[in-house]
Amino acid sequence: MKPKDIQRDQWPAFFDSFTREHTGWTITLEIIGTEIGAQIQDRELVFEGIVTEGKEIMIMAGERLDGHITHRIAQPMQVSFDEDEESASAGIMIKAADAITTLLKLRAPTFLEVVQGNRALAAKF
Image 1 (cartoon, rainbow, N blue to C red):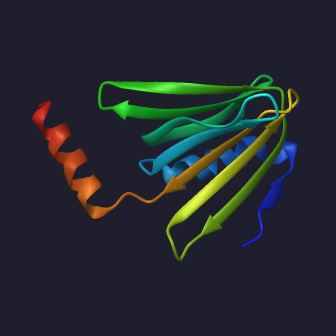
Image 2: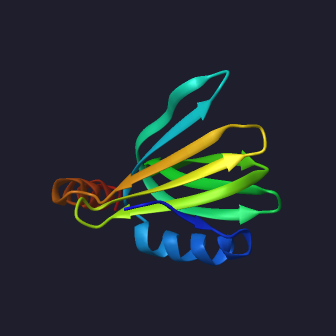
């Protein structure tokens, strides 16, 4: 499938819908820039949400049940979305004014990941 550009005025609604549909999926965050090359920022985190706030986009993900990370993208210029229903994966590409591109890659959790997460949650109670 070809990536679809999301218009700036649609970002809040798109991110809200995307968050509702993909919360709990496993993510990898990759950063790409001419000076830094391609780098994995974070991997195997649990997606919690993506929002716009002021002139930033924030991606939130959980490392474990008791903590999370927030990845901030200053001055985003372009947002593109791609989804592959057959492989249960999705991706968002965000290009910023500083020429840094952030790739948010998601995959649906496997049955085993869901069971392990439920066991860890039950152990807290």
